[in-house]
Image 1 (cartoon, helix red, strand yellow):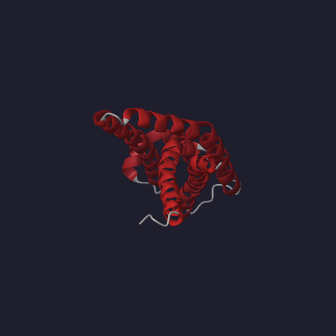
Image 2: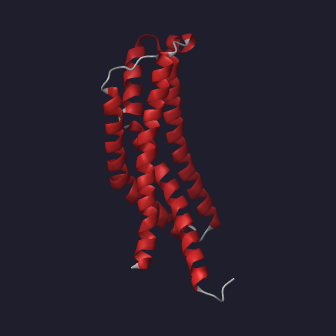
Image 3: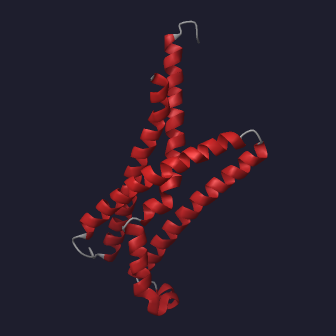
Length: 181
């Protein structure tokens, strides 16, 4: 029973942490854009953005990130016998996570550039400014961030929570054994 609770606790912490982070990040980005543009964009945005991101974050974390993280973890254990394969696996994982962050940060930078009316960006986008902004707003604020960053965030939080739980578990074992230490 205790071992099963020990195994599921990092997953529960990673799910809760991922949902909170993936819900709050788009809200923060929207508030930054709101203050830069000085335009709310409609009163429903303050309700729709948190709700849509919460919904997508919960679904994506439970349906996709949790099973993918378990698969990544299993592959990592299988691959860890060979040091070279382990490094390639880590580079692939970090590369995919970095790509998600680049897409989110790049999209936000373009959105800020359009809102702040940066001339060279408006020249590049020319007639597609409205279409680009609608697409960026949909991706950044209406559920795209949890999809782009969900697995990376979950796996990072899973690894950190597993380390915290194992350290706590090791500390409890030391306190129970009077001969240890």
